[in-house]
Length: 162
Image (cartoon, rainbow, N blue to C red):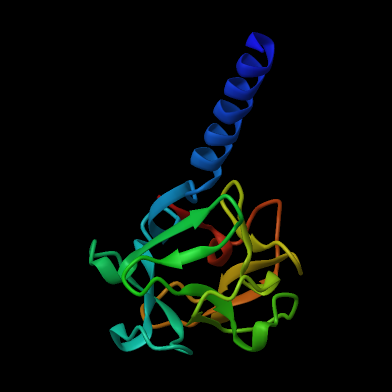
């Protein structure tokens, strides 16, 4: 009887640990989604400061405003902190060059998953990097997806969450 009791207590402790450990999403990174180019100072910002579905994400001077706050969880979803919505390629086109990045309700769709790598962020399914449209580093530029560059990484694709 004592062995069964000890076994049950161990089993309950393991189940409790699993439920507590997996019950909440652990953010892998949280802060601003910003370009890592010296002197650029651009952050991902919803166009017109809107939080509606379909809002296009643009570059803008980093101000620390809550509208520029993002997080990426261990599954790769980049969430806009103010709206709770996910960074989403228009039309869920995670593998398409030129797809414009938008805010959209998080749906657990694979197109909403990203990898925060060293100096670049790319889609998990499609392998396209976050890129300033036209390689433009100015304000108001749409964020798009494009084939990842390397050696050296193009300035327009140097993004990270800090």
